[in-house]
Image (cartoon, rainbow, N blue to C red; front, side, top):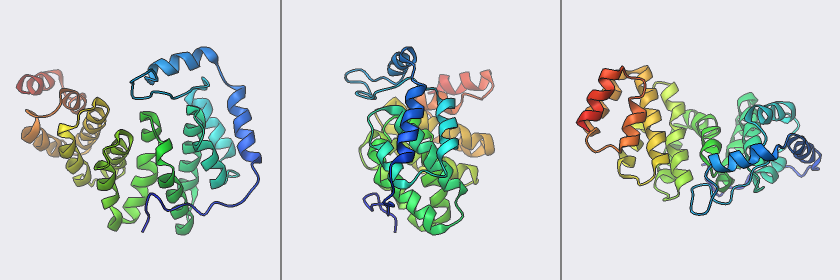
Length: 252
């Protein structure tokens, strides 16, 4: 069984790749962009991203770096990157981890990658980090190991914002496989959640269900629209025709 505190079998390799990724990110650092990112990701005192630090490297640049280095990057390197306080190191590490997982055809290797992810969840601590990794890694792995589905319930019951968002975003992989029950179950659980970042994620996932089977989304809305947080409802119906959006908003 995969558990969060099961440490990955990291290889004892040198840190040359880590240092190369460090240099590549620093070469692309833009102080002006870093300032804007710190505002966008709410890093101020009391905000959800408090204390997060940015270099000012764009996401496309980080993806390019990940594609350049993923083959030679060890799980030891990835853990080192994830331990950094700078946001771009953690996001680039997650891009690399996803690439390694998607390219691997060996079950043991995929399990090791998943263990690495779960062992470092404390570093997956902003919404873009969650959304860029959860369904690609944990979601895909759970589709292969359905007996371990209780992991998302453990995360959903953690009382920790980012683990709760990981739980609902993980279900995106199930939605893509036309399996909607995990999302519906967690969306119902989070109806009373206090944070809009959970409302947004749950509403987004309900909308994705509707993109594949609108009747199922409508049934959920009919049952819960009067108690849904306004943000969750708005996200869920975002793609509806205007008249239908007004109908649901008026009744909520």
